[in-house]
Length: 160
View 1 (cartoon, rainbow, N blue to C red):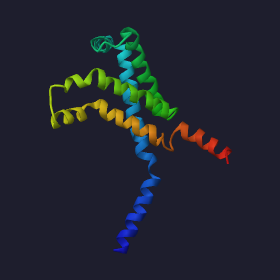
View 2: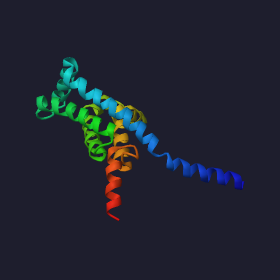
View 3: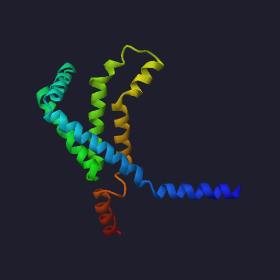
């Protein structure tokens, strides 16, 4: 019994030491995804038209302006998250974009369901998962393999 306790105690400690790894993996994948998403919404006329139509159908003010602003923010914040620079701010911006996408566009697709089915369909939306990842990055930070960590470490050392 004592050996099992020691094994799990060491495992818990080692897991904390490797916490940077899953954060890095999430940052890489979600960063690349939003870089590509923003890029194609700006430069692919069909995707840009679809975004503009979605914004107009949702009665978003200044739809033409926002049809360029939102993909630009996706591209920029995706890059910032990928390299780990201003990760907290970039995560917050993309979290707000996900909330707005859910509220203005995606909830209509699940409105006809009731009860547990509506919850299941809501949780199945990709924007919900992306929003949770951005919320996690906002609170966890960018991890050890990031520009934020390097400059934050220098700042922490100077403050003591």
